[in-house]
Image (cartoon, rainbow, N blue to C red; front, side, top):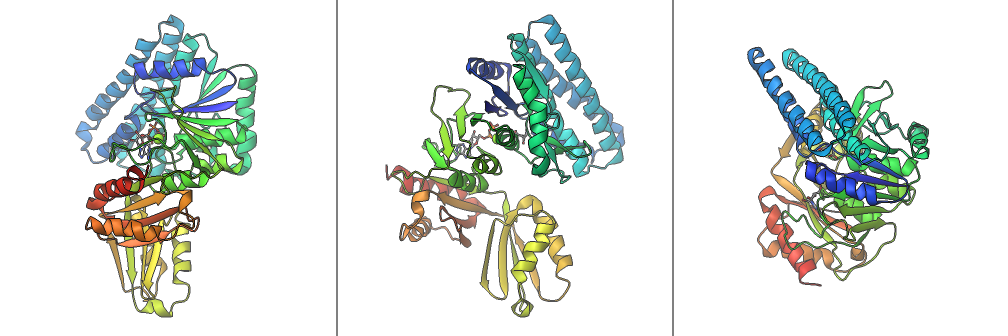
Length: 465
Ligand code: ADP
Ligand code: ASP
Ligand code: MG
């Protein structure tokens, strides 16, 4: 049994969905399909939700109607283009209409109440995948395959109530998922599961974080003991850099789990940072493939660590972060200040990406931009004493990371990396090397991002092999 996940671009138009259905149809054996929302839909749901809470009551209805008309039209037109079987078409249209009505009701409610809680936001965002599963499962049915559309919750994915970035409840997932999926598989039905969305134990919809459909796929793979998890996307696999920054970026044929985790964590958007762990736990290979070049080998992610000609396998940049600087002589007398900081931020589910203390009276750490406000609040209220004199936030920064197992024990590599950055006249603000020794990360100004990625890619990848 394999899990095949298709991302937003892959299901972004009727033509692309045809390519997806061809791939599914050609693949023999048992399979579970996971899909994202059609490209752009989650972003548009996010935007409308934020827009309507600021609008005067007199225009909310008009704005919401217009939005619903657009999103309903997009899904119905795509369905009509793809499905010619009258019964299947009518059923799909009626399900799309039903969801459009529900979405309209919640958007009006949010708009008039001017109350957009993380819980409502997750509910609104869930519509993207709830709509796309209808189309994909109907297309498979119209090709005479047995298929069933399932939300994440219906597939057995239960999480805590950390809306926006919910954590799966692993202790109950195994049984839940098997009970939901196995009867379908045994009946030769192809489950078409909505990625990204799940529900808490009360059945309230949650989401796994943006880009989280990959995570859904690996959770299903792990608990169903799949032989492979395939991530079908719009590039040939994991490349040596973001092709949007470095057009010369090349395909990386194999990566170890550890390298893939570091790449995803530090900005390679092609896979979600949490998706590797479930696969790694039970040693399931993860393959990244291109929907639009299905014959390509893609990237295979396994436990084995292989070296390449270039010690640095890939360069990534993560711009969605900020630095928080804490200063205060009082910190010198406060034992375990970083311990306290970790627990304050941990209590709010904030992840520290990098930390450094250049002196006892100075501590800097890097977190995601969307956590900054929360972090500042946690610190200001948590350190009630006078140990912290000033708290400064720097937002126009980005983390650059180089990754490769060959870096372990390669003497002088860090020095060469930093020299290359200095050669293009860029200042390094902060440095960290992960204990796994498969990455070196450092911070530069946001505006230096492209220059640094291009320089490192040229020196350590293009010029080497
Ligand atoms: P999907 O919608 O299929 O989940 P994403 O947009 O999330 O796809 O991820 C694929 C995109 O990730 C690519 O189109 C590419 O622009 C971007 N990307 C960034 N870094 C890398 C990298 N190192 N290798 C491949 N793609 C990358
Ligand atoms: N549709 C969601 C997003 O855009 C999840 C995903 O595509 O993986 O973030
Ligand atoms: Mg993605």
